[in-house]
Image 1 (cartoon, rainbow, N blue to C red):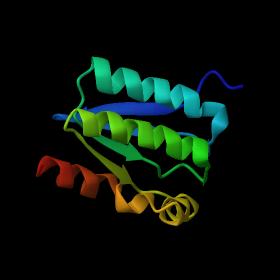
Image 2 (cartoon, rainbow, N blue to C red):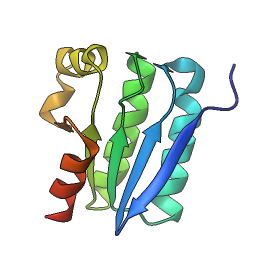
Image 3 (cartoon, rainbow, N blue to C red):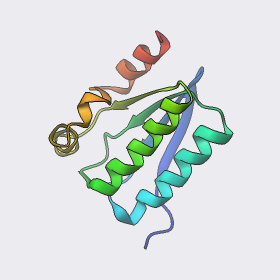
Length: 119
């Protein structure tokens, strides 16, 4: 199992942007991503999160589970989450699993940030 995964975290005002720099968002890293989301959303008191998926070519149910964990934590704390720039494969998976009904998806990070700034 890969104990390290590559990501970047930056903040624009009160909005955290989590960019996953991995080609595969699957069981090999999903647990670690969940850990990062839990720390970020509980200890750093982040209420607005953008997950930048532009580099992710493959995502499975484990990856979706990590995204849903962040969604649930934010929902419980009256926060907001947006997904940005998913590749065609990842966007298709989100649509097939009908998660696009609860997760707002934007083509770019800038669009997602603008939306959250208005909230």
